[in-house]
Length: 274
Picture (cartoon, rainbow, N blue to C red):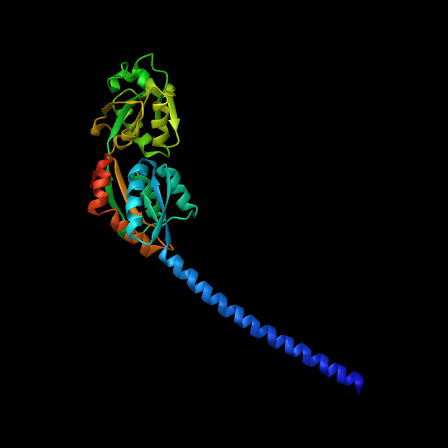
């Protein structure tokens, strides 16, 4: 009997502990749900929008970011790089809600793969291709015809396969009939901002960048804009990414990019608003 009583008592203890644990677990569950709800509310109030944008848009979008975050419950996270590199990242699944490309070609690629919302695609901006020279070569380079001078040893452009500005530069130099004379002296850069840096620091004698980039020069000199007829039109399309986790928030910023305020900022930095 004593052994039976002990077993009974032991069973009751286990049952009591189990019930207590379950109740405690439910309490923790309710607490977690409440906390989770609070976190979700906080996240909703501070939603993060991932934006992949051409490097040439860095200064303009940084200024727009400051203004937008004053009036919207959103955090803008920019990924600035060459449009070709960004296209590859998006294709491989990198976080992105909105894409601003410096060329139609890279946006075309994503649209063909069904990775953007085609209805949202629009041509936002235009630009020009500009020849710049280092301070040391400012007297040597007065026009694109001077690029063939023997005293110039380094001419920088973006890598044509991935950098739209580099593609436009190669097109222009080919159409102007001087590419073959310059190819051996080319210094290729990962994006247009690196071209600017090479020229500004004297690591390249001259280079081809967007007109909008010249505003960020420190020591270099603007030589001239290349003829528009020498290269494809420079157009910046923008589009929302399909299956974005932040479609509504991204769409709100997409609309803001077409506002009068944003247009004024883009024009300030040398872009043409389309």
